[in-house]
Length: 240
Image (cartoon, rainbow, N blue to C red; front, side):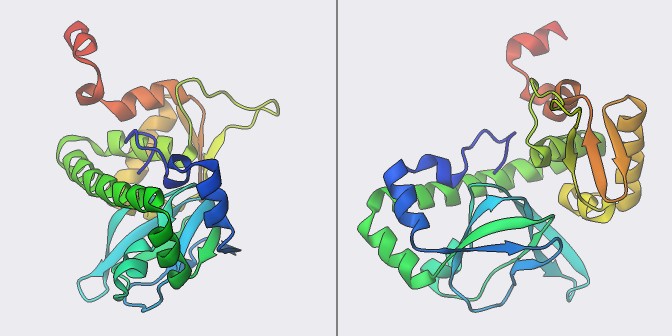
């Protein structure tokens, strides 16, 4: 789930009372960039509530030689709930894209909490359904959007910017701290294609690039590019 999908993060769907009760079950843990939050095949059952930062969910294919990116997980999202519910091995690996602060909740505590809090259990099911819809959107994007558009979408999502975003009082722009090869994996493209797309965005003054980082200089046009014609309302499409 993310900014462009329009879904609220899991934590924001809970009442203040339910969120406080859930938080009381866990302990904070911070993961460093590229560190695995969860590992595919592992039999642990704890869940993670993301407090800050972004991570990438992927599964290994071609005997581990290739990563298939399944999605991104950001602040407010729940990670690892499937293994907590069915107690089967983890189906994917989750890797930190930068520093990620989480709340670690034991699986047995999580299951008891859901049994006692049907409203929260309903939101967990809603999150799972939303992720299935997100997967459909990702497949559609791969088929219908250019690499530049997919990259713009990902940069908007990872930076948390919107059309009204402005640099802070110190002049700092929103920054995505990610290596180009990892950024390429999140949009289903080669590193070379992403490098070319970044060059186009940079030439238009929308971003500035550095070592393992992309600064968002112009959120509004970048968001417009990210949405693309298919996401515009019918009235806007008729005017263009």
